[in-house]
Length: 132
Image (cartoon, rainbow, N blue to C red; front, top):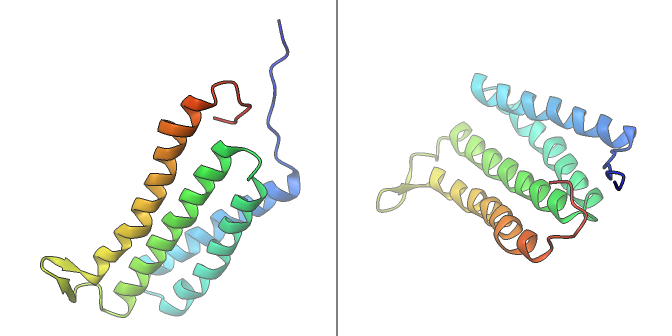
């Protein structure tokens, strides 16, 4: 029986990922409590660390696709938060759509990343070493 392969994360990367969660929570708490300066300030470390994580995991398609989807999720979330903070979220864009609805664009890009991974890449690379 062949030994099962393992995927390990260096401790310094794991610490950064854990700090990323702290920044993300502060961003979302600030959004909930309408603490505009802190909420806006937390976008930057949250997004930067998400990008760094995506770049560092690029050797595994499963990891990079999921992490890039997270980058787009945070971007959509940040835009939505800003639209509420500055009260343009309910302003009409066209028809029934408001400026808040523009957040759907990065959300959809994230979904498309995952759809590509699960529906295209993974079936074509059944023997590839992946984390998912």
